[in-house]
Amino acid sequence: MFSDPLMMRAVLAAVMVGGTAPVVGTFLVQRRLALLGDGIGHVALTGVALGWLIGTAFGVVPSDALAVPGAVVAALGGAVAIEAVRGRGTRASSDIALALLFYGGIATGAVLIKAAGGTSANLVAYLFGSVATVSWSDVVVTAVLAGLVLVSAGLLGRVLFAVSDDEDHARASGLPVRFLSTVVAAMAALTVTTAMRVVGLLLVSALMIVPVAIAQLMARSFAQTVGIASTLGVAVSVVGLGVTYYVDLPPGATIVVFAVGTYALVAGLRPVVRRLRGGRRVQEYAGEHGEE
View 1: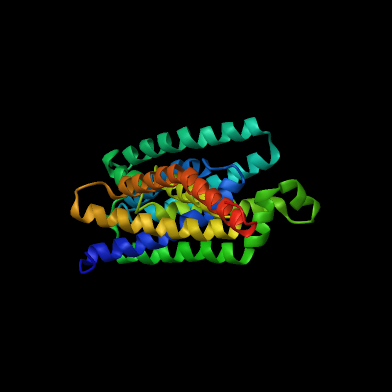
View 2: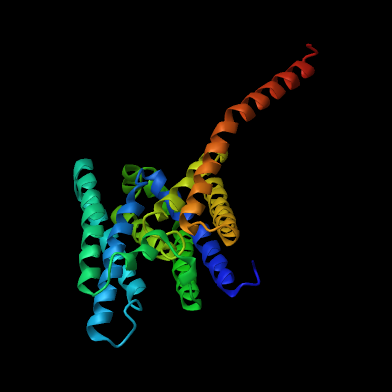
């Protein structure tokens, strides 16, 4: 598998996406915004279609050459907009804003891609991912976007955690809560566009959230959650791609299925592990006190 140039590009992209997406997802889960990635993904679809439309209209570049830049711009704009609504409005207005992103984003994308002379089939690779279309330029773009996200998380990790954990306490401590909240939203937008080629816009939120959910079952601190989630993201991405190399299955969906299956396995084994640990502690206590 690793001698195939196409798979090498796909694996590199998958490792970067799998390692980056759960890092941002940890902050989103902490803020109870697990569905934000879905909303941003739908808006990014509008950016993809807008890139197609501009490329087709001017004819100076291939029709899909501006798809990724368009997705980045649209995703960042949507993320900032929804964070502005969430920061100034109520929980109900935030939910409405997310719904508008969901439905308006995908509908506008379908309209624009038709106006560009394409069909809904042209959007499938972006909706569900397509490793066959990953080029070396895509790998470079993915590396740049992933690097921006990871550097931001590394430099601002402590204050981002403070804002994600308790906004009121962070505001009372003098932190720029609105700015930092916007940073988290922007990181989510970059992550969505980074993962677009590998798992697709419709499934990227799963790669951001499911490894975090697994990590929370095992970790005892926020830092451990980030580390475990990122490792799991890389593992399920590489394993999922490995399976699709030998079996004709959609890579993005396969990766997410492995992630969800891992969560089910860990959640099922967790009570058993707890009982075994509890029994071991009882035996140790009895041994220390000379009891049988």
